[in-house]
Length: 301
Image (cartoon, rainbow, N blue to C red):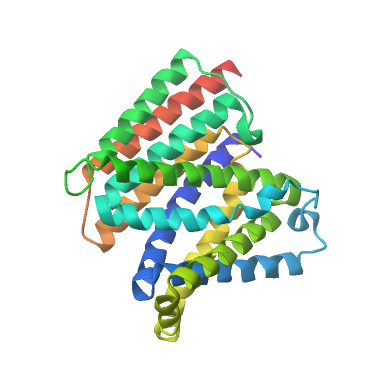
């Protein structure tokens, strides 16, 4: 598959993530964030299991079925942590600043993966062009941070948001590594199994009454809202599992983040009558910087 297609899939995944986050938030408001996670993971698991059952005779769907390291089977646990961190930070410092900090965490961790070759990622080197390009990306992230609500510099919550970005990128890379052993569909299925199991334990043990009460509200919710988050999550998990190991991790992080921000701006502008210029300028700078990274790699190839 051509590099351009991998890049396009990463960009599309970023836009889908923005829509998915809105759907998950709306479902969480109608029930609870715990019930939103449980519903989305259940729908995703059912869909992936059906795909594997129908396509069990096709190697592209069934996957290679190689033995995988034990820790990859628990990758879905990251989802519970990411969901709860995002919930706390968005309430505390606002969605814009939380998103900007998470973007920084994704970009920084992806750069570390690329430079060290950790978790099976192809090791890559820096050169002056890439340093300048990454600095432009960092400037874009700083500009994005200026759109945060409130104006108070809450370092603890910003670091938590960055941690959510690190965990998100780590989960994507682990999914991609798992896909090498099991195939993207089966790796995604295991991700949903782990996330659903961890979510049920976490919310039924720590928020039992609230979760059970919210589950009772499910019949009153729009069927479209119920299924949207889970269906889009399947697309994101499968696509990123396939793409992340094919291109530099920093490209995936920047494309996912920039197009997620751009799509969020479209959603805010047309559906919520809101617009944040710093997010637009920051996302465009990130794309420009990533273009410099890509130019540096292709000219040296």
